[in-house]
Length: 136
Image 1 (cartoon, rainbow, N blue to C red):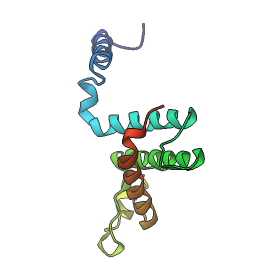
Image 2 (cartoon, rainbow, N blue to C red):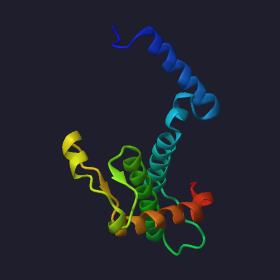
Image 3 (cartoon, helix red, strand yellow):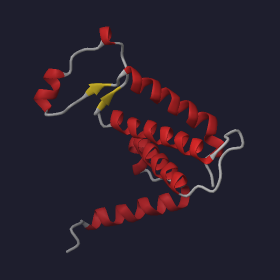
């Protein structure tokens, strides 16, 4: 009738209740890194789209938007790593080839480039530095 079993229906209600009561459900902790990355991406995107100000050490709103963009990019990159679409940076001489794996599994797994690695590190630095400023 609904396309969902009764046990799934009640399990979904239980997990929604847990999220309402404590901010996360037992199911969320099965892949807590993925859950948190998703929440951070959504929250920071919302902040960026609905800005009313910026931290006092930043001189204008555009700089703050650029920083939020880097934080969003970093957590989207984390999602790619969790989903095995991207592997963390490894110097080229230490990388193993993913060509045969990609062909066998019809994927396009690749290592992060050095430029992506620098951007990723910068995004984490911004997240740490401005964590207490992620409010509006």
